[in-house]
Image (cartoon, rainbow, N blue to C red; front, side, top):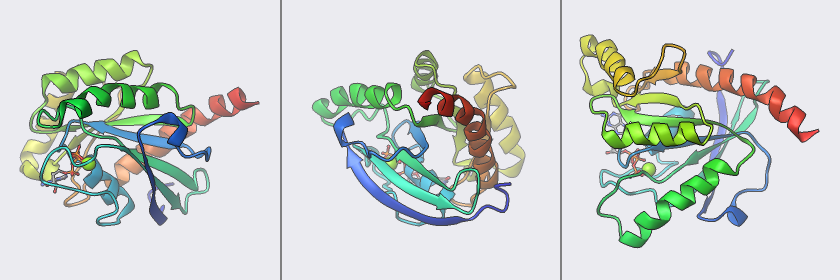
Length: 214
Ligand SMILES: Nc1nc2c(ncn2[C@@H]2O[C@H](COP(=O)(O)OP(=O)(O)OP(=O)(O)O)[C@@H](O)[C@H]2O)c(=O)[nH]1
Ligand SMILES: [Mg+2]
């Protein structure tokens, strides 16, 4: 079980903007998608318990390239994997050239990466925006079934957390069978649950992937 799983190492591999730059290694990958400032880089650091590994900023638009991080764990099923921190969508103040590249850059990655086994879509638990709804539809259209993470859970009082997550699911029209996790990078609430969900999704995906490689 990943309950007792430990992260052994976590390190930055490289930043990429084009497929020919993506790492060659065939390790299973998890992509983190969400609007600018929602807490993607913070969630990655919290998951691997390394402060400052993925760069964080109070100014939206910090992450502008695809950033790959290699993670090793004590788990036997999945001892090594790669987290990919994607630039946030909807950062209006980014240069127009950056905004125009954003869609194609991310879409190329999300559609043509065979080892990408799951997308994590992060949504602020307090405010689901229209662009979160359209992004989920876009991901689903590409054939992904994202794990939806409600971030900044610590900003809600204990009593507001469950209702907040229920509201988030309703806004995104997520059924009960979809994977949703409440998360706080500040308190690490939801960390075990997210690791367990990642592991379960990896186990569901792997048999098909191995067959496709035969
Ligand atoms: N209270 C609270 N603040 C958070 C949490 N996660 C992130 N933040 C804050 O939100 C801001 C943005 O966090 P980032 O992790 O840089 O967000 P991002 O989604 O990577 O942003 P971009 O790289 O711009 O797309 C920072 O000021 C973080 O400290 C959380 O769980 N709780
Ligand atoms: Mg970031």
